[in-house]
Length: 383
Image (tube, rainbow, N blue to C red; front, top):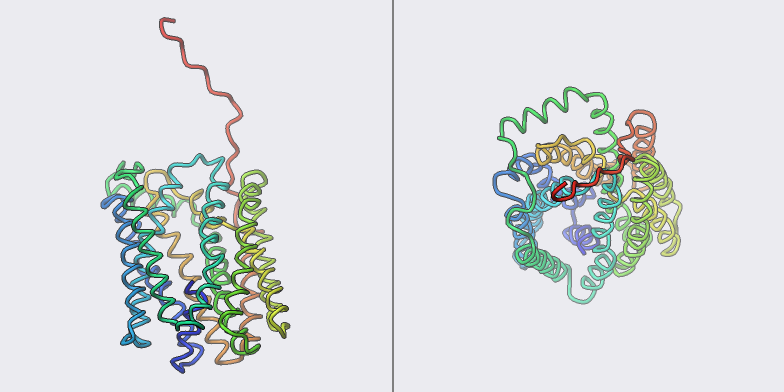
């Protein structure tokens, strides 16, 4: 819902493109600062408490932006708080799936998880745009905060108190395990980290450049921009199932490489659009590419995570990705001020192709084939 709201809400304050990008990236900054502490806290406070704390912070901070006394600076501060909550919410769910799903089915599980996250964006941008037109941007923040409150209620009612075995090792041993994993696999992890950063840069940057280009260059309404983002999200969701099947059957790279290359093409087409329909087509192509990589970075992180210290490693992994999520919109905003939106689109497109090339040549395949040996039958009682 806030994909449409935040860029337009920030633009109404009359600030520069760079400051609009800061507003868009503020939640990502909060998540970035909290990723490692959140990963370390999981085995202390438990998955359920992490989910409740995180969703509660998102709900309260987002609803507060709806107050008319909240200005631009306070909005950024509250979005940072929402990002901190998102870190707790996101890592706790990622850790649970990583520890609970067999490796041979991990791609399908995490791509469906990513698809469900994308399902939430199907109507969100359009609803956010319509709410801005009918009642103003602050009502959109209130509605988004209430959705986070619903997530809090679901976690409170349905998540077990101890839902995964995250208390197996002491804190010292868990961090030693992470350190040993990083040192022993430093080359592979460096390449994977670069790919993760570039991938998240184009994913986050597209969420700023599409609304800004439609709003600034094509003079589209907030409702039209929301409709464009919603159509792109439809392709996102539809492609999540084939993405997971591809990752588990043909390898992680078979999904990731086409995903980011197609996104690079789609972003490069944005400066060539001149109407609602042409921007819709370019955005749909970007959504198609992004959907084909649904859950790919989460799957790669889960593949690389050492057993017994999943939360700590995923905290570090999410830091790398969130650096990309923060710098993607900032790259668009800064280049839009220095050059223009067309130049920032081509730069963001190059980032997508860079991610694809790194994955092709430098990132090792992490898919693990299931054991073909059937399990031995259990002995009969009395045998």
